[in-house]
Amino acid sequence: MTRQRKTTTQEISDLNDQNADQFDRARAISFITHDKLFEYEPDIRSLIDDPSEVVRAEALLRLFFIWKREDLLDRACAMALEDESGYARLEAIGALGMHFKGGIEDPKKKRKVLRTLIACLRNEPERSEQVGAYRAILSILDGNDRFSPGKWNKETNVDWQRLREFE
Image (cartoon, rainbow, N blue to C red; front, side):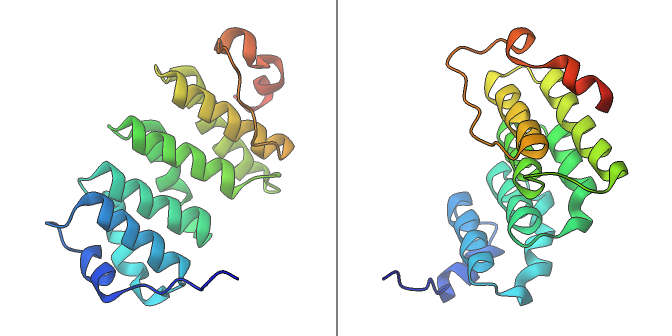
């Protein structure tokens, strides 16, 4: 039997303490969202623009994916495409794939999300972000988030014909 997690006062304190370790702050976000302490949502939202890549990525991931805050879709797409940190971009890519796993009914939203992920797939210089973007795409289109190629070549591993309709 697993004991329910309870956020501690130290974690609450770490949330907005700019001097706290970035990983402690990210852990605080994780625990607060896990415990569904919705009264801290404004604090967590403010951290989406935090200087720490770990903190801003965790804030977006938890609010968009875990708490299903659809109003953050534009911010998730922007972080996936434009964040200065590869880590934050990869977390935003993952959040998009997990949030919409199994499909998006609204055609405009589907096009926006898939266009974002295809742009990430095409433009990301790093293998991990490219694979993450394709995994997110497959998660949305097929419900399959287990794509993990041994060798990666985006020209041969990606079914570009299938993606053409979303570009």
